[in-house]
Length: 179
Image 1 (cartoon, rainbow, N blue to C red):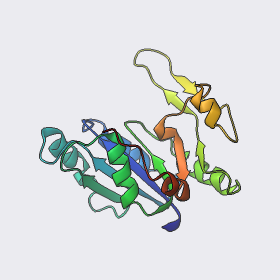
Image 2: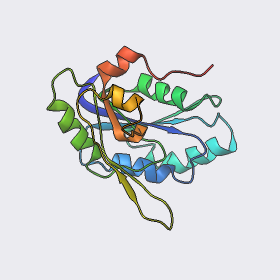
Image 3: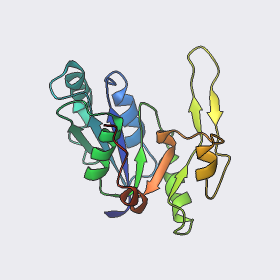
Image 4: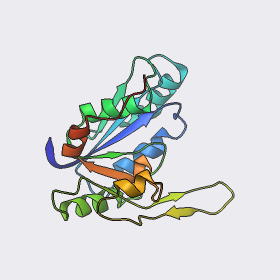
């Protein structure tokens, strides 16, 4: 584990058309102590995997970028777990087929560093874009222990809005895999 580093895990499945923009949003953070790990879950040699690898080839010389491909499609949870297992960061963030604002990571790191050890993760607001319609912002509305509110559907989180301390990820041992 590298202290202060944020590992941004990006699972990819059939996302070759937008993957470069997703990666750019991760690499262009104002917080620079990051690594960006793309886990290609299309399956080695498939049309989508080949297109994804080609789209990402421009990052191959970037020391902050790691590309991993699964031999076959496993699912999003497996891709996230692969990324976590290959990560080096003190903090873990996820980015699906979304985009980060440039200050997203720095704001999350600051928030986690300013909390005591009882805080294991933070979450941010996020915007939902609907083509041809207005944008809806989903903002944090709970602080502290949010498990009950989350389970009751009182708050909305998406994986791209969350950053966790590595110790929390290690405690829950990754994402649950469907049989």
